[in-house]
Image (cartoon, rainbow over all chains, first blue to last red; front, side, top):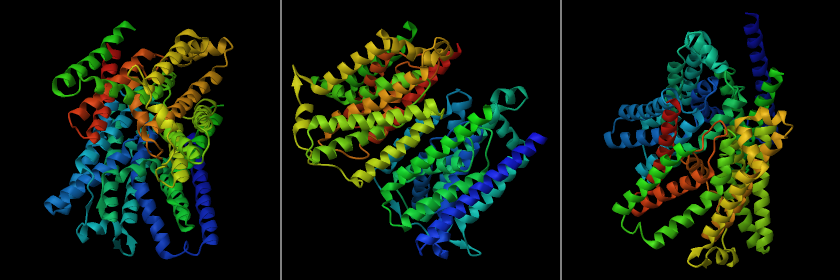
Length: 318
Length: 305
C-alpha cells in the first residue's frame, strides 16, 4: 500500500514538473510573439495536440506493457485513405468511419497475434507491419489524392460543440475513459503488471497473451480513429498522410513520463507530452522557422526524453 | 549452422526459378549485373547490420544517415571540394552518427530501436535543413565517372561490395574483435570477467554501421549523380530484412555473415523480379514487409521444436 502511494505521489510531482514546463514554454512564446496568445492560436494548438494525443494514447498502453507499436503512423494513413475511399464511393459517412476504424482494428489485431501467438518481438513485428501497410497504401492510392468530403464529415475535424473543437472533445472523452480504464479497472492494473514484469504477471494468473492482444488492438483502433479525425480536418487524403505522426506520437508518450521499460506512466502524461510537443512545433511555426527543422527537433526531443527515462531507471536500479 | 543453410538457399532458389520462368528478361546477363549493382549498397548496410543484430541491437537510422552523408558529399562537391575531401567528410558524418548511436545504446543503456529511431529523425532533419528539401545537383562528373567504370564487364559497385564483404568476413571470423562480437551478444559476462572492455567494442560495432552508411553514400551519389535528403529512407529496412532472412537471429549472438549476402541477394532478386513482372514498387515494399514476418515466423517455429 505504502509503495503504491509513494508511486502515486511520485507520479503527481512528475506531472507537476511537466505542467511547469508547459507554462514555461508558453511564457517564452507569449513574450517572443504576439501571435501566440490569441484564442485562435491556442485552440489551434489544442486541436493539433488532440490529434497527437489520440494516436499516442493507444501507444501509451502498448509501451506500458514494455512493448512498442511502430506501425501506428502507417496504420493511421491506411485507415484515413480507406475511410476516404469508402465515403467517396458510397456517399455514406457512417460506412467511411466504420471502414477506417475496422482497418485500424484489423492491423492492431494482426500485430497482437504476431506478438502473442507467433511470439515475435514487438518492435520487429510492428516494423514489418509498418512497411507492409505503407506499401499496400501506396499501391492502393497509386499517387492519387482523394479530397472534398461532405460538410457533416469535416465537422469531426474542424467543427465545434458548445464552443469546443470536436477533436478536443474526443480527446477529453478518450482521456476520461482511458484514465478510468487504466487506473480503476482490473484490466488496467494487469497492463501495468505485465509491463513491470511479464513473468511475474503470468505466474500470478494474469492472462498475459490476451491482455497484450487487447493492448495492440486498442493501439490499432486509436490509430484508425486518429486517421478519421485527421482526414476530416485536412479534407484530403494521400498515401503518406500518417508517416510524419509516428515520431511525434512516440515523443509525446516519452515526454509524458511513460517508461520504455514498461509498467510506469499514464495517459494524462501523454496528454501533457502532446501539448508540450505541439507548443514547441507551433512556436517554431509562429517564429517562422522553416518546417524542415521539425523532424530534427522531434528527433532530439525523443532522444532527450528516452535518455532521461533510461537514466532514471538506472538510478532506481542502483 | 548447417541446419540453417537450406532455409535461405531454398528461398533464393525458389525465387530464381520462379522469376526465370515467369519474368521475361529476368535471366538475362544485363539483368543479372543489374541485380548485383542494385544489391551493392544494400550489402554495405547489411554487413554492419549483421554485427549489430548479433549483439541484440538494431540500427533504424542507417538509411537516413546514408541519405545525410550523400547530401554532405554532394554539397561539398558542388562547392568545389576535391572528391577525396568530400568523401572523407561523408565518412566522418556517417561515423559520427554511428558513434552517437553506440554511445546512446551502450553507455546510456537506451533501447536500440528508440535511440536509432531518434537518430533517424535527427539525420533526416539535418539533411532536410541543409538542402531545404531539394535535390543537390551539378556535382560534376568525377564521381559518376568512377561509379560507371567497369572491369571485365563487372561494375565498380560490385567490386566495392566484394571488398567490403571480404573485410567484414576477416573482421568477424579471423580477428579477436570478431570473437568479441560473438561474445557481446552471446556471453557478455564472460567478456567482462576476462577483462575485455566490451562496451568499447560494442560502440565500435555501431560506429561501423555509420561508417558503412557513409561509404554507401559514395555509391548512391554516383548512381544518382546527386544527393537528395530522403533518397535512402527505408533502406535500413531492406538491410534488416536481408540479415534476418539470412539466418541471423535477434538474440544470443547468433549470426552468419554469408547468410546476410544471400539475404541481400534474396531482397534484390525479389525486388528486381517483381519489377520485371511490372509489379508496382509500392507492392515490392509490401512484399519485403511480408518477407521479414515470414522469415521470423519460420524462425520462431524452428526455435520451438
